[in-house]
Image 1 (spheres, rainbow, N blue to C red):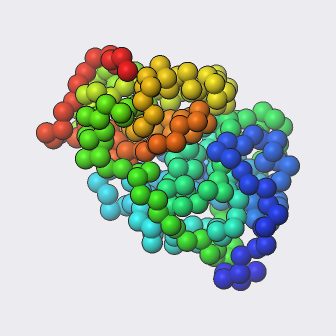
Image 2: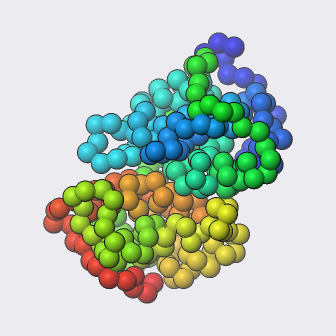
Length: 291
């Protein structure tokens, strides 16, 4: 197969925002199915992997390395080049997972959607759910050395937003800004893991820790329960903006909101790694206010 001729995947089954382990296992090894390991930090590049999984490196190649804050969205040209180097075609079906459950995989899912690619889903429960179901793994890290793909980024404005857009959203009664960090970090009672950041939260934002959208086994909660969580946090506001430490777990909120039926969604790319820097941007401490 040449780098300019994508495989024929016209019969491939489309996937939704979330897919379970059994469904992926049933298609394992099919042409046109791409599996990505999007684990970050100390778990990045660690074995084992789902057979054939490729690395979606959020700590390096798939973040803007010129940005002063971590996990910043790369430009369309850089994103296109990275996905082509990983052998992805526009006609492929992509499933992303991480070794923690549903954590950084949601960031990869949101980035692909922001770049105009919809044939992508998050593996519900991640690698822990995969192994718990008895599916096979390979004792090696995610890797790819095959032919180049033909993927082309087609950015969708508004899915990834900057600090000024979030500041405007905080003043908009029709919008809610939800913070995916722990309630202690939101309140400013727990230290930030990145040095130099102020403690607390954006005034007017609401705390909704990403872990509260998941069951104890790391699987996402049902749609009706997710909707109830977002209603409790955002009231009747349907335009939702998400923030976290560095734009990663904010995407878990974006995933949960999508599953709950919300459609006007955006992720603050810089998140607290940017807003929390010493600056004139306001910071509040204490518990979350009501929606």
